[in-house]
Length: 478
Image (tube, rainbow, N blue to C red; front, side, top):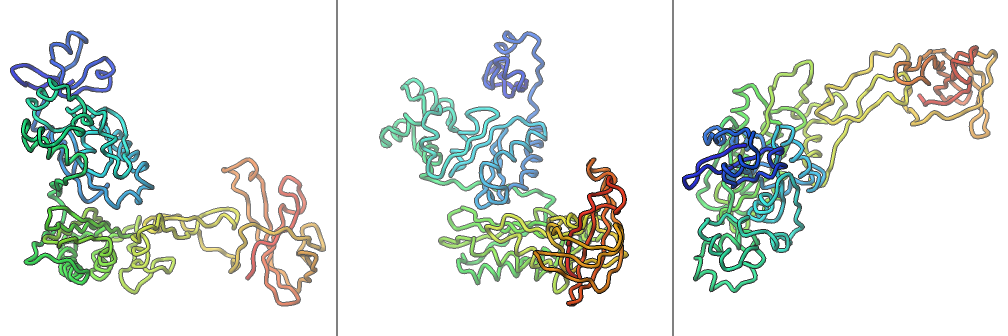
């Protein structure tokens, strides 16, 4: 438990989950807490260390959205407008935030609503909870909360309590002029911010180690062409800084500060680290339709929120930036544009995977993991151009139980085989399942009298029942 001096006495400012279960709460006098738990372990609050820890946590939170902000002394804001789809929806995003904070050793409450003030009140009304408010429903969500959930002075809260105004709902239902006359305009401002009638812009936090450019414009801009011109001017400077550090951008945030103080933000990511000017410029300019300038944009900020070394090592082969292609033939710029398109949940590439059976020889991987996927070794035998998802059962006639096929029947049609090459024997992955132990397939490349080149295989070696049933299958076409 953590305590700090307030009004000539020590007040509890933070409690652990165990202390909370014992009945201790923030705001309780230290003497009362010790009377409830005699062997209580306490520590005096270190304001400087707490400020440094909150700064570190705010810097970490930039993975969620490009607009993190402080709610001192122990809270954080994050404007996640337009970010929820990246994490599978708003509910999944809140679960992910809480799980990652818990993994860092923090107990927290998370709330998401239309306004920062409403989210703050809901999050501070309980510990270890998640609250998701539907659009336009913040008034109903705040109705039963105590007035102390709002950032009001203690004197104002005491006066409201004496008048019997204990909830935000009771306060919101009163006529406004008497409230303003008795408590001042600050009370109404605080209430309006929570209910969404008034917006106070967040003071966005920018980590000191990030590459960030801020440009104040002589005149506010509002057209797509003007925004594109600003992007084209800032990206080369950012790329120059990245190149000097030997790094490439993996994520860029473009923030537009409007004349009313609110911020419009877009975020783009790349499939590999890059400092290529045309590629990054195109990605950012594709997001211009997502920006609502309203009465104009007076300041823009371009920040590299994630970066990695540019050198290609054994774990990553850097995709070409311009006309080149990745190992699967897809240009990196095309992959990036698909990944950043609104509404696209995921983009996958097919990569070779080591497997005993050909139908399991491919896997879906994300473009950034393409270089890390295990590649199949060089095959001594050719593989068909068309491989069926599942092998097709056929009836084969062979000279011997383990001999080459002479003809086969598929869908009541007989195909005579003019030439056959094989067998190529493949063994099952005995270390994976017991059914694969001892399993054998003998593959034959055959050509029919009509010119079809096919890939047939027999389950088993043709002699031992434990190696397979002896049935024949069609696997693919050359």
